[in-house]
Length: 431
Image (cartoon, rainbow, N blue to C red; front, side, top):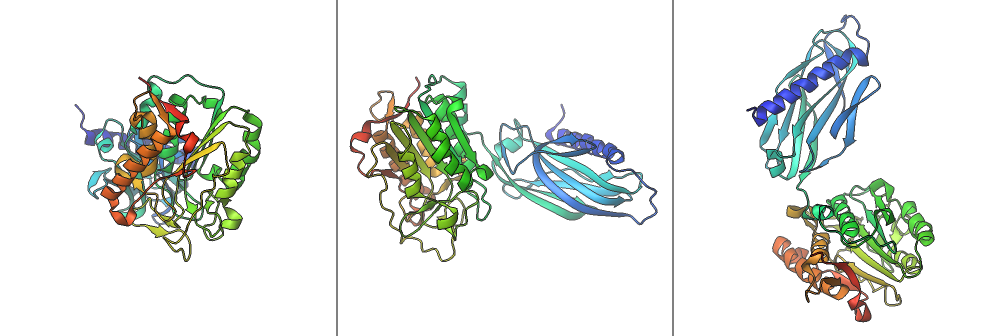
């Protein structure tokens, strides 16, 4: 039986052979009347490669691979090529150990001059050892034994919530809607690790267990979650779709920015140092939601307004001169009779991540509660009061265990006193 090592080497050999065949197609060879030379031009991580015209390009570029995905690929482009050269890829697991090396492969064997060459190497993920090693990986590429590129990427285990779509589901209800906003990669500040995973699993929950039809889910992710994108959906698109009596779920995973009057949600294109111009005020956000023609609006915010980033091992400030721990955010929902919200942390706290589970800490326990963990009275219905108490207890205790008191996290329900909103049913437990 072929070993993991043999499979990787065999696959790599086939891929590099394919790229050698590409050389003659991609650029017309010329007599090698110049000294041996090669210039690194580009590198990419992707889920595969695809042929575009006369060249091969990376397909589905990403730096996050789930454990159920077939492979992780590193693609290279070498230009101004004359003479034969050697390429090598070394892959390192989360502990920094060499997982596999491609060994040296020769490109441009005939030595003639070509404008460029594309080559790639991959490791298998699904059902392989790599799938049992989630975390931050590194792959390095070498040209003639000199490092030319290095890429960091994550392998994340398949979430327990992703399987909800394969089990018993709640029948779709045309009167239910959802807006899912998630920004993992920002244009002008640090990323929010696992935000995409959070949003994707929330969408699975909403369609499988909350009864939201797939066509009723509006998703704004990363570069599609600009300030303008969010405003168009809230101020125009949803107003034309919702009707009196409808229920809207709103989920947001991203950065929050403190301010003296009202804090801000930071869109993809927002500048943390100029939130009044580039961000979406929380007051404005809730005001726009309150004006929608819906009976109930249920909001989940996996963000914080401390001015710091908590989805990293070492916290850092998002803003110049941020003063952690001094902001006091008032409750913006006291005047609303339709909105109920659960936010990830108190105003001076961080919204932490849960590395082992591949989620934001708040979102992980939010989903655990929604699928059944919060059903305190075992009646098969998750009410807002039950969910709030469950998430507050689990996030509070887990944040202390993982990070200590320095990064304590306590989710907040709004309005502060839920009163009649305690009994709003937010999900159903599927037996």
